[in-house]
Image (cartoon, rainbow, N blue to C red; front, top):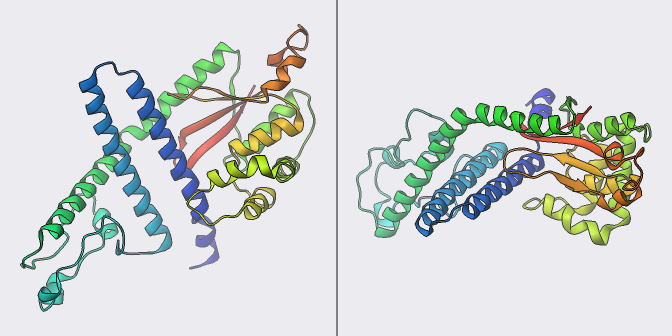
Length: 317
């Protein structure tokens, strides 16, 4: 593989971060839907629906990681279908050769059977596993179809809600490049227009990491939670944030707000409420009419569905 294709391939850590965000978003949507449902029977159906969505999402994530690592089958995975029993192994290999689930899912028109034309007896356990595998495949295909149909509309709805929130505060979106520096670029722009200092992207990254490292006891649990299911260490995380275009998130927002002693509000859409950081700094401006809280708060926007490759931060004006 040449260097250009290697650079364009997303890192495993970025994929896992995005997948974790998608799972958290679905859980939050699930929780809110249950909270707004009053009937017991309806709650049961709703719970069943979201459980199905979660299983489909997790299977989708598993497939994505397998493609990323170059694996071709689901051997040793919990839900994979076992091969035929030992006494059936004399069947022609050309008939019993098992296709990988990844290969099957790449053919969008139809999900083929797990085995070719082989005819042999299978145990009840194998039948159950085969049935379960088929159900998971169907859920995954349905999830793909729903994403294809609804993803564009989700982006439109999200943008409509964000613009409505911004209009209520006499604000508009200021676009920031989606280059991995969007969070730091948004904060940089806000600091400039609020006349709170001129910083480079690199300086803001270093400020955030310096705070994280200086407050390791407090920050490390949140750092490790943001990279769960990876082998990234605290030290590697800090090095990536400081020296690469690694995405920033809530950990860095906390660090920047506390380091720069400035409140930050993140405007979000759909079922997500706005997030505020550094609220302890509000007191400084509450009784000052000419130097109000709003004038001293950094307002940035968080998009989930704006780009296909993951969440994005924009600034405001």
